[in-house]
Length: 208
Image (cartoon, rainbow, N blue to C red; front, side):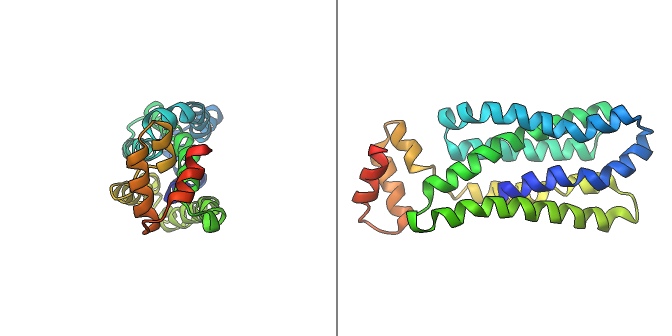
């Protein structure tokens, strides 16, 4: 669900950072609009690709790719030497948001036990709100010095945490079933449920 936090942070942080970016680069209103909306355009592109990416590579790998893009784009945005470079990296950041906004709740839904599935999937929505609040707090902290590069670069931290977490998470057993890896899917499901008796749930996944 940290993917939702990244969504919220990277869309919210620009509200404070743009005040200082505008001053440093002497931006016109058109450039200001481009910097702010680049993430949304990227998210549109990323969400249009997310279905194919998650179906072809898997839910977990799609999230790993999104994390790597988050990290690269956050570093690039923080170090951008010109407004054109900043807009490009914000666009790329939006692509990661688009992929993560689809693959994260899908992954949560497919690995969660039925009795707490709704709660876990809703964590993604809660994390988006937390990410927005966090971005405002970071903006406030750096506002006294006008360090907009630190504002944008701080998004690296949750991305690294998410990437580290994904290294120990398994692939979605439902996706593995769709790809014909039934034995591997059953093994993963047993580990997720910490139980050897998963026949009923596995049958439900296989028939669904």
